[in-house]
Image (cartoon, rainbow, N blue to C red):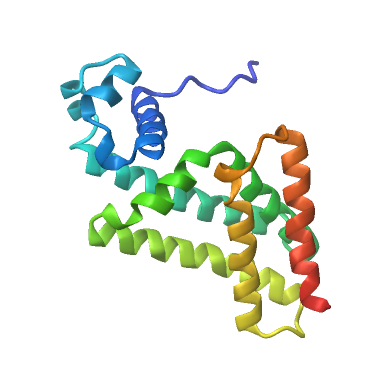
Length: 192
């Protein structure tokens, strides 16, 4: 039995390269020919997989929001009944995202407004649901703290964790450890 992950599909390869290129040079700074060349197909060949660059951007930003929410829900269910375990798992999952998908963080920051209104609303809706997972567990751990303060703390921790595209290289293990301590410390400060 092999433990190796399946090779990415052509569509996944295209999305990965599009995210990298869009993050590096901006959505309008990248053409379909460049994305195609990065995955070894012609620019027009991309249209067999996507209607255009806008569709790639939407799939990237809606897709990561869906993955974060789904992953968060799985983590909450897996550690149910243990709020400390749930929070630790949510933090670890978000750190993995922040370290593995830095290009998507940059892309979200710079290009969210370029999405069609319906896609932008969907991203925001998914993000609100993801925030609520965190707010619920942090309120369970800190019932003495008001909901508004907890919500601000959750957003502040997201800001901290999502700063990874701007961090100097410490190495993955050291960065992961530091981010974990900082996130737990931020939530611990709610009781102070």
